[in-house]
Image (cartoon, rainbow, N blue to C red; front, top):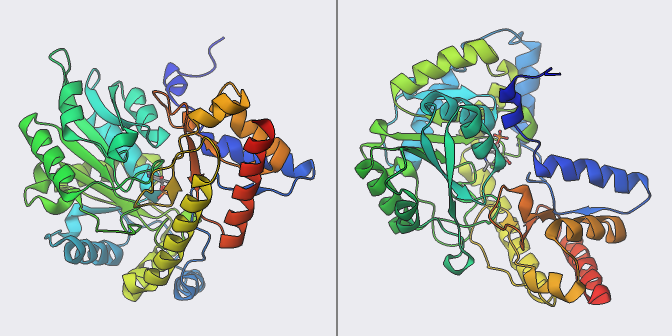
Length: 397
Ligand code: PLP
């Protein structure tokens, strides 16, 4: 019997949350868990932001507001993004959303027509594929290759757009989840040029834009003609440690923002008002607040990379961004006789209490053969977790 709409079948659970449940099961069995599984920073939001939420609640900022968010916050975001990327964004070109995720859901479903082909990186954040299918589009996967440090090459996108395709858009994410790759300036320029030539829109998920350890981040807003085809998405979850606050934002042309106004009205009325005061406070503090965190994460990245490199049969690119490493464990699988990364992930969890996500959690070619490690733990935990991982491989090998 069909209880659900067939649309519901296009949506799938997210691997990261599945392993969160498994880790809890292992914890109940008494294991001391070290989790490299979850993709959220381990620091608290700024003190001042927390105070601002309390104050907002006390003052009665507890009601419906505009579906596009507080006007003051939209103005601040417009100024902030404009300064950051040397562009000229107007407040009417900004929407505040319920996390970057709601922004993605709205942008993908508003821009995808049934039958459209949409470029999706492989591997990628699972939401992209789900929502493209939900909207009736067809994801066209472009493989990110280890030999290119998992960067999306415009040549590879071009090759995927064969004559039978109806290209409509690309969903791009740099710095990238799950590989930690960061696009170079020339990559961004090449992809923008290709998008224009093929008349495609670009949805650019830049939620990790501040987590770049070497070099800098190039935004897809950097083309002065961004209004014609770019939808930029970011938010407060990663830079400000506000994953549970659910405040994200979009920069796009006014037509897209107006369509989102109606979409948001029907879906959730407005992003939570009191939490937006935390975001206002964060932008007042400015990005300097984040700089020590970035240094801390860089040290963790270096250490996790070094420790992983010592494990027999594990090869790992030293990715420049986000808080992820994406080790290649194909050789380790052969040594240990384990059949798949899923089996490796489960045994590692239930035997050693260590959570790493199988690459297959990110709808894949063969993310098979890879694991995602999120280094959002104190250094001593990273060291201990990777010591156990090494022990596991050595004992089985
Ligand atoms: N985009 C990417 C690539 C992510 O990894 C995540 C969270 O893990 C999100 C978006 C969701 O961000 P938010 O918490 O703002 O919804």
